[in-house]
Length: 213
Image (cartoon, rainbow, N blue to C red; front, side):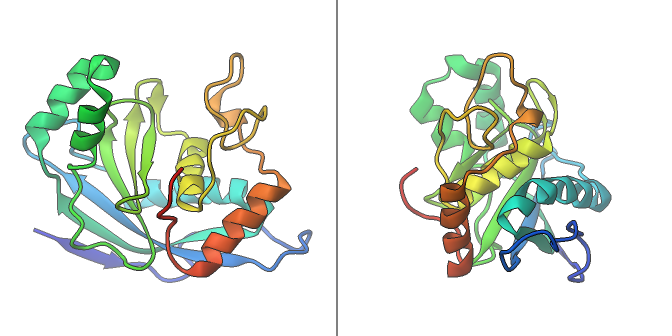
């Protein structure tokens, strides 16, 4: 069964942008909450209030690019392939990477996607890391919980960065940096001028990035 809740445009608040020279770009994003009676790992019981708070905090990071994510709607959907997902989760990083990728991205249905546009699917717990972006489906999959704890807004902002065409790099404290010794994910919030330009270009196109990352 599918339920759709529409949000008013004021649901997610961004900080004041008066100190920026860039015109704000607002990106509508459809939030999909996956449910599963067969897998507690896939069954996400996120509340609307939690999701709004996560995006509020992610928006403080994207403020430097004058980009604001706005919740277009909230959709509740049944997850696919729960048994296979649980198998992959138990294997963890011992799972074959190609098998893991295939299974993870098979869990979310695509028939209620906002297209063109941006989509994010929430599950209870990721099989690895905190989240992942798939340019083929143009979708973010993220867990309410990750191996290291609860969802971190910088991880949410990081995966949204991939949807804007940003790749990983090794710049310290950068939002798109991979693992850095001694630096927590919550501290990686910076965007350089080149990233801002690229992200704004994709945002203005009206659709998620679908190329190679």
